[in-house]
Length: 139
Image (tube, rainbow, N blue to C red; front, side):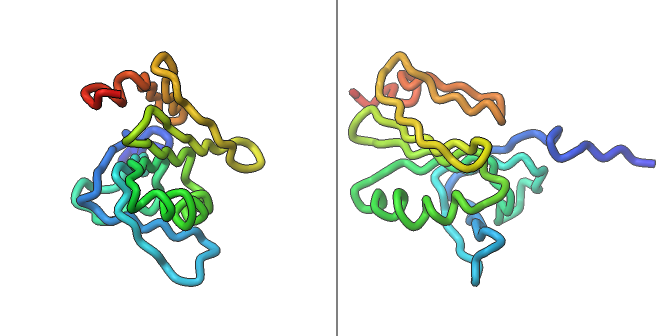
């Protein structure tokens, strides 16, 4: 009998915009797709998969062209995903990272703006200092 690791034991895999992400919550009338800047999936999807149906973390780097959609339509759609633990928005023009983090009963918004702060994504065992996020940007 072959051993199958439980879903929580699967390694988390980060992917970038080269792969389309299916991000339709169960309540969606029709599927919708986005190309997030970074998606972290821990469901054990194959490397060649074009979709991540169960993303744990989604990161978008804000631009003047995308900010309205990233903070509006995508925010509403992403937060409806049952698998999502965090939606992270990284401002490219100032040191500001907004994290929508799943808590019991819904999502809370956290804003990180100080160089000494760190983005902590405990559900995937990751902590990144803001200083490292903005390294080589001049901010």
